[in-house]
Length: 260
Image (cartoon, rainbow, N blue to C red):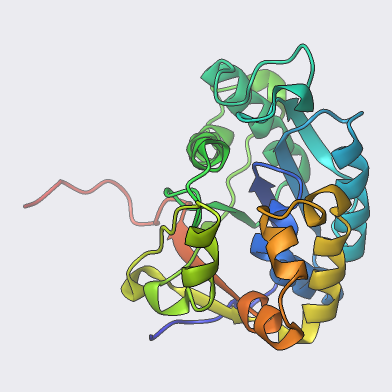
């Protein structure tokens, strides 16, 4: 596979569905950026700020150098008790969820944003897929002065990185996930534009994953599956992170006619 690495270390805002996604999907990149002095932060769509998993998330983002948790506080699609009295993230009004994320984008003003790919990463969890939708809409809205004016001054990140897995990078997960009834949704290798070797930050990433203690205890969750693997197998699985980059800012050059 031909791919580039993240060659610079701009400020980074990660937007993920659940506590633990940030550590599993982009923990190495978050640690890498923070270690280089870049500003980093994590927005998490589901689970209430007063839930047990909020404390675990706080520990994980601290380990990764990503500051305080930024929780939207909606309910997990499959765990109603994750946010009692709140709508499921998938059911909340789209304008509301986009506007709230625009507020975080305009406050933090990141250079790049990282989120789930259109499949919702390998497993296709509905919250992952919906986070992708909301994030892509919020990125467009954030840069437009007449949208969500109450959310702050417009801000347009330069690029969006979608966390993904190429067919050739699935490795041992190709047998592990189907065994516990999970989907395996990878993309063609040509779609991956950034392949990041995160071995220098592997200990930090794994410590952040372990901070999600309630997930580590569950045998069917990815943290639980990883914790029960031999060390060498686990390290192979989590030592590389894959992304597809999309430029967000308009290309200079003025108006041009559409041509076939």
